[in-house]
Length: 404
Ligand code: CA
Image (cartoon, rainbow, N blue to C red):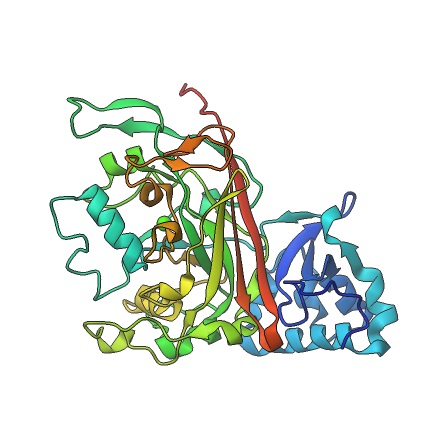
């Protein structure tokens, strides 16, 4: 029960309580928690009730809360639940609610290192068939380790930020020489992101069993990708300019503790990975993702089909002793299921541009056109039939700027 008047079936109910950073028209950036159709100024509420951890929520970013570690995350979450359910808090907490439709949402924490993985067997198989039709779709290492690359954290932007079409070199196999110009194969990758709260020192490792001690929460991520730039540059060192121009993230970070009911067993692994990558607990997550292009659903990728879990990704990232820091993020890689309408990229949906996708208004797409808007949303199951919402990550493509 709650003293709040929550909409029926809201994806931002008491079981969710995702964190973000918001501002009102005139106000500074504040740490907020989405609840129903509102956002709670968590720092303001914590000060009003004189919470012992109020300092963690007082600033313009989630960084202090992230760095405080799991016992603090659990303490704050329990307190938020108490404030929003116990009538004795209502008079002090209610003044700190703002209609969510009236606030601006910002990048919620300082982004540290950014790694992007490639953890969907269906996606990796499809891309292998499209990019390397004469080879085995999966490389020999794929089922032995979660493949990843280091992305560019400086171009991680919050949902709603426009994306300028990148320029670069491209060379189709039949072309004699490369040419320079705006990408003509601009794409999306629907992904799920994870943020490290409590870091780990250089020389240490984070085992699969310690995932929840280090990872604070989960968000949505769109790894915008220029396929023509990528195809020409990625051998032998992997993606570079084809990915580094923009990565969009959703503004709400769903705490791991809100996803207890969404945890599922990952798919069977064959062969078994090396001991440091064996599951200690089930960290598959049953998230239902929708991908919309100009408002029309073009794919519904199921995150539960991912071959590698986020716990395995973090264990692999640190197994060589690399440190992690508060605000480090990693993406799952494109989420694609086995069915055609479950593919999380236009590369796969249009099969390398050979099978244009029909949109409902009668137009077709292979890759993105200027003015196109892509929006990714997701929900997970919560307790008692409730839904845990992730909100959205959206972005609109703007025309290329000429090189100077
Ligand atoms: Ca990616």
